[in-house]
Figure 1: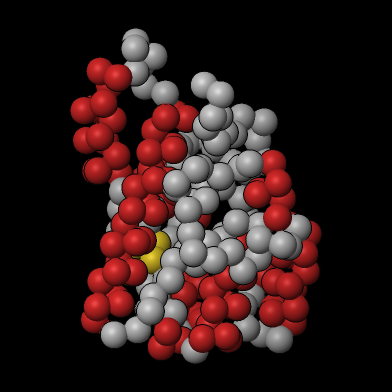
Figure 2: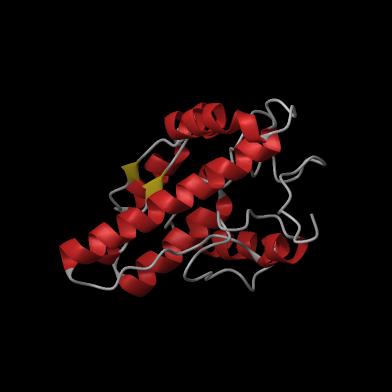
Length: 191
């Protein structure tokens, strides 16, 4: 759960489909995403009555970037490489948490993704990162439909408008937004 429109809608859908005792939102900010949304994800989770867990991937990503600089062939620090690494680390942490929750609760636990149709169509996701999930409940919704559904929930008082009014970003590095021309591309199989 990032605090963005897509993750807020997915949280609402999971909450109403599964019940709050079966929804385990996880917030994984680094310094940039935390600055970007001012911890909006915990505020939304609290509003929905969900207990959110918070884990940072920054220290792990920093250590791995330092360790793997030898493989970058003098490319230097690259935001795309680091951004994709963070997305993959987040997914690793989500699956570890899902496995742990499954053992603790004796229930099948699934990792639910927040990708929408537009992101999936243009390839705006990281392979084996935010694209590697068990289920994409809004994967058939265009971004405009995501906002239409959020308006529906706003009108019923389940969320407030200020919870969804911000520039979309995966929060992988400073200045990265979903709407900007420079995005983190998925890797190509032809490389």
